[in-house]
Image 1 (cartoon, helix red, strand yellow):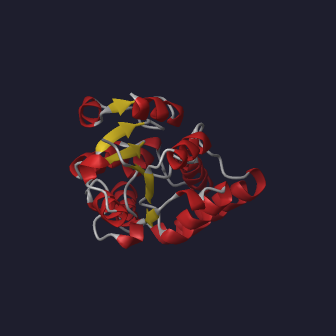
Image 2: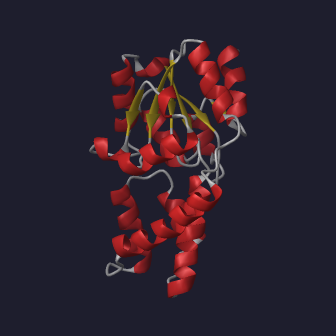
Length: 215
């Protein structure tokens, strides 16, 4: 029996993974830095410290990640200010359904609290979550299970009664290792056979989650 739904954020609730990729690659073009799609795919769903390691592995140990990340963030902030935060189809409908039907909800994102909190406010969905666990609140990030185990504990719901919604292989692995049920909703990375084995279902959008819960 599912009593709680645990949400990833980037690429799952908001189309921010695509924006992050585009702005990193634009920065690369401006500075002659070979930021590739393969590099970006490797960082999906991972905590900040892993992203630093992955960038340095591809671009050299002297790569000043935080300097360039600050510039990339300015590109992205300018886009969001002009166009607003792109919300994934079905998010509002799903959150409303979960509230109306008595499900507990949690946010469990690798993104740090300041950025994630700003996105939730921008989208007007902050109030829908009973608890929030950010990347800077756990020692080990995804694909380790810590963030989902903490979210389940804060909700007071056993992991096996929690449904994790994830877009990335890294996040699917975290939910699976936590002992939760998992639905994968792919964003920029197509699921592998291993992802499909770990997930209870793979659906094209958040719109299909309600049907899964009702079956």
